[in-house]
Image (tube, rainbow, N blue to C red):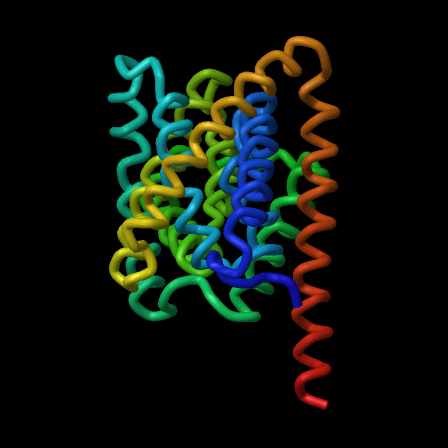
Length: 261
């Protein structure tokens, strides 16, 4: 199986990580999401999921705070989605307490399953609709599920993004709502990692350095977005995530079967 430790080959790993965050930032610059998902998916091929999750904290937090603008329009979203954000925090911290930091073969498999689910949902283009009367109880439940997935895998797009799209928000409000959910999820994940002693200061410093290639990638992605169809780019992204997810699950199952024989 692939995946090692941050200290195995520091310089080679640093270059690879910078390339990962540049690519993930580029994707976020084009389609408005994907930095944590893509970076977790690719970094998990190099290191254990807990280290990958720790590295994405600063780039994810800063880029999602940027996505929250304009801040003046944030209050209505906070009122509407406050229960969901509480659920995200509760689910993430409960998962961190019960599951520990993302680690081991089965955490990698769970990340693969999350990527497969997200890729299939994106390719199907299914339109979901949530009635207003269901939001008071459904939002916290979706937040709790998203937090649990975040604690287990470091990825916080499932089921949050499909749910937000089902609320019928206008485009700008949807982008801002995703930024809100991703920001809260990033902070909750950082708290969960700290609780499990999986976020030492050197990793925080390295995570801050990874912000540079992520921002450069976002700038490049913004230029690409002006020249190509975001719809086709998003489809390619979903196919790539689906393929990565299948590879991760198959790799874990093959390794587990070999180890058991």
